[in-house]
Length: 116
Image (tube, rainbow, N blue to C red; front, side, top):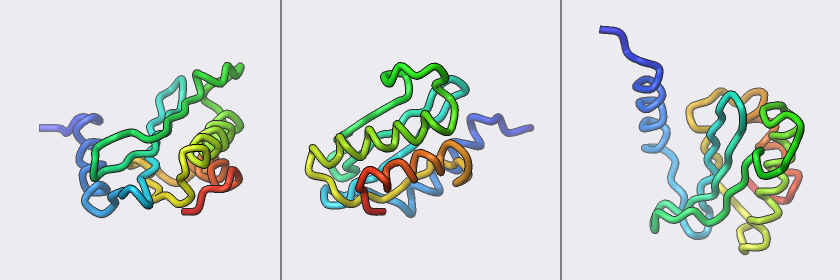
């Protein structure tokens, strides 16, 4: 029986989550991308709370799914994280390749002042 895309992604994410965990000092920045938007959250895994979040839909950009918008989402997230007192994070690419929109979001977060 063939494995569906959703099952495959869930298995990849589980493997990554075994290795990557965020704490209160260095929370986890996780990425989710759809065909229409890109989402990012900073999560404290010990408490199970989302500390900061940003997505491309709230920016009001013309295109919510391009590299420039992903970079702006990263910068917005970094700004909100700094306001919340977060300086360093662990990057969780969510099973996606570190390329394109995911890389642009990470670069935007670095540009905004977050340390990986």
